[in-house]
Length: 332
Ligand code: FA5
Image (cartoon, rainbow, N blue to C red; front, side, top):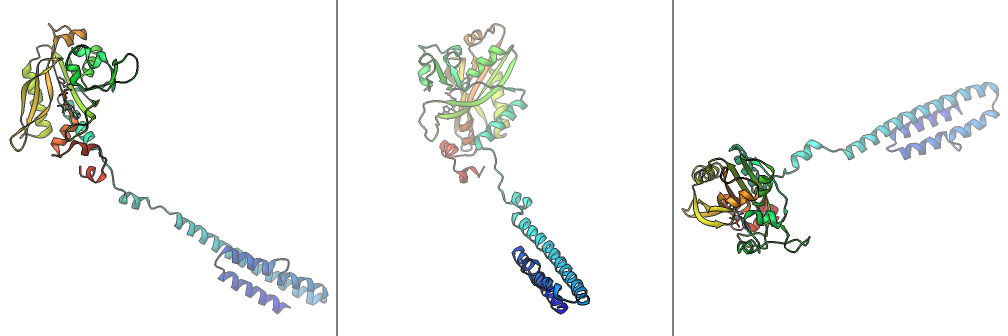
């Protein structure tokens, strides 16, 4: 019987050492230590032995049980730590590896142009101003010297919003309303630029978008002349495009500036490209904002940021900017 117990303990130890998962371990555990196990069977036979034999067999039984229990604990520790390790391995995230693989995005072409414009103008002493994208007729037209009967209203292809009186509320068709909002809220001297989204019923084509971006500039101070306007545009063009590019003013018409001009920049092939409009702030506009035109003079300008991005990167079609083709956008 003692021999049988030793053999059972050795057999259990061997099988536990070989167990590869916790299920195998429990099977060995109940086979050797459970109710129907070899050990329990032998224990029942102890009663039939004489006292000496019983003592020796009892000791051998305890010894066998201790050996098997120790082996079970060892096997459990080994298998559990192995299982935990396997889980850690399976769930492991190598964050450094992930970071290397992920492609870093960047700002959209138009946002890059807008940021750069802001930097250039802030560098020249301008402050950034903002206004709402939904405007009233007062800010978008009237205060800008474009009364209801004025033919220029038609040229703005305005998108109206169905709020309040008909044709009273609209998506702003240019950033010029920010001129009015700034002059209403701030005493001169004023040096601001206002970039932002603008909207017109224009059908999208190679040079037009129905939702596009403009940047407005406004200066109001004492003794401001057309020379200051021309000089400011020239400095800006040099700072933005580099020393090679020249600018010129061409006479034009806007109701809110007098005189008015369109400004062009020179291109590599010797032609001129229109960038935007500008002029001396009309006295009526200053008066509409409570500023005395006898004491203060100003100039203003406004141009398209999307078109600027198109020129800077020599794109063929302005619609590329809004097609959301990642292969295109990635290049810039
Ligand atoms: C204006 O919007 C005037 N508010 C500009 C101005 C401001 C003049 C201050 C004087 C003083 P205009 O409609 O020309 O002007 O538009 C200015 C620029 O916006 C254009 O030169 C062009 O670059 C851009 N632009 C106009 N319509 C579109 C469009 N549909 N898509 C893309 N860019 C456009």
